[in-house]
Length: 487
Ligand code: NAD
Image 1 (cartoon, helix red, strand yellow):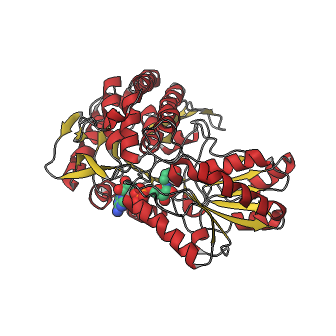
Image 2 (tube, helix red, strand yellow):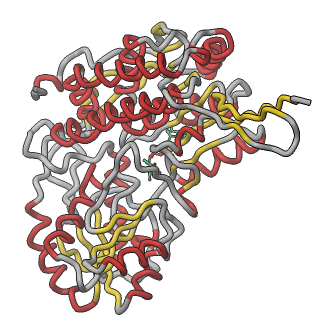
Image 3 (cartoon, protein in one colour):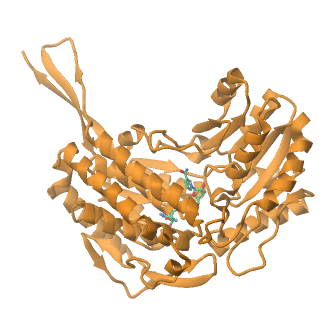
């Protein structure tokens, strides 16, 4: 079991760059801060553009000359299955590392983050065994078929909030399909990516097929984006950086998948089961301290229920346990960094200036670390920046609506379109409203029902391309058609 002592272990995994199957040290280092205390717990190497060059060269060589791309899918599947087994056997270490790095409560990190990545590797292990093409009948004497080919070198760039899940959602399908990878994790939460390099290598992923370069977006990330030896970019992060990444990829016509920001609406209709709806509402905005692209920070409530829902939230939200992520009873840990806390506080201050009613929370905890009380705000105009922009903290705004049309209009009123949810006991309404919401995924009567088999991704400013599910295989392969004349 993970204990508080694990947090202060001097060996928080390796801290070098992982290139061509070897660790490379760098004198220039970046501090890694425990958000529950604000203390520096370790440092990691800061990659230069030359390091990124070397990592891409290693991946290129592994892809072009190494065995991985030519290894039968069934054998790659065995390796991915071993990865899942190793994740489970090293779960405590992964949980402790991820919790120290991001501030995630250990109970949730164990049940969600670590278990999810084990399932991702198992899922893509299964799919690696059936990467078939098709035969096609055409009106000339021929044998015509399609084959799926890996793309080559994948540059994976990931954000700070779900380091393990969002890197595995790229690396597992990329490996399943025979690609080589250079992974650039977020600068402030890099530790688990290094542990995963160890695990992947131990499971049998050949040298050069997985490379990890820790460092800044401006240097390491940019070098990876621009590198001519990279065949595809898989980017998850903010809409602002994603837009820039799309422009850079566009210059060389590099394929890119973009998993970007979100600002989901959560609609409670008058016919909802209110207990379930409130449970889902709280989960949707406090999970991972609201640092969740698929969080539900905009609650839309049918007018007749509005006062009742605010009353229940005012009672229930202050009771959500906020505290040390290593305490097994904690539900909400600190925010992942000081800048993330400061940004959420700015939005709360703006809401107050605009006359919002603070229904719950609103304050930073009076303790070391970057803790923010789960906060509920009501009475803001629909065009307030607090409602329209992505806060990315444990902050919920509540609006009322008169009818279904107004609920849908309010839900679709922001530039984002990643997730959405609704609470209703009416099955026809569930299907009808789900079809009209601008979102890549819609949940009915719960929140964040995610699984490696369910594709997710955005519409509008939330990006394009899908991760998870068999759909993710399309992002890491291309189809080749072969037509053999039989004339
Ligand atoms: P971010 O955009 O600041 O950083 C994401 C990654 O991009 C980091 O690794 C960063 O170093 C890198 N980067 C920054 N500048 C770069 C540049 N010039 N060139 C190349 N790489 C660069 O995002 P963040 O703050 O780490 O994460 C939060 C954001 O990510 C939120 O907007 C959230 O909604 C989004 N997100 C989306 C999903 C999804 O699946 N759609 C999932 C998680 C997070």
